[in-house]
Length: 136
Image (cartoon, rainbow, N blue to C red):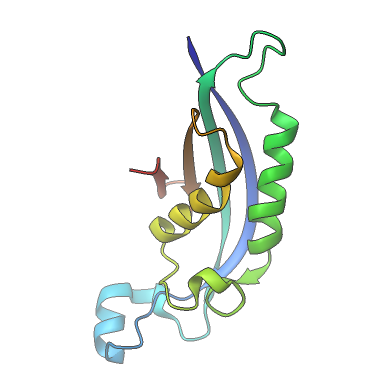
């Protein structure tokens, strides 16, 4: 029997969607307001889910306190109140779209989750716009 355990978290960050190899016109055409050279910010909502077998001894798939601490250490401390383009090494050469942010978060968390458990990252850039990444 598999059960999915989820933890919600939050961080605020600024970013700019931009490709240095494109002209200003093309960047504006593709990324619009998100290409603001002075950056812009979001209040990101994050849901991290771990799906696996219930441990017969503890009754947990994963201890939620461990998941909370992992998200804090790997995501919130790395991203909260940061300019993703300028201050987060993973985005020095990677455009910080919601899709790419979700993949980076998944990659940061995956080594800390049991290999037999599935990991899912759901990232809300706005209440209506969100992405989900499961490692596939």
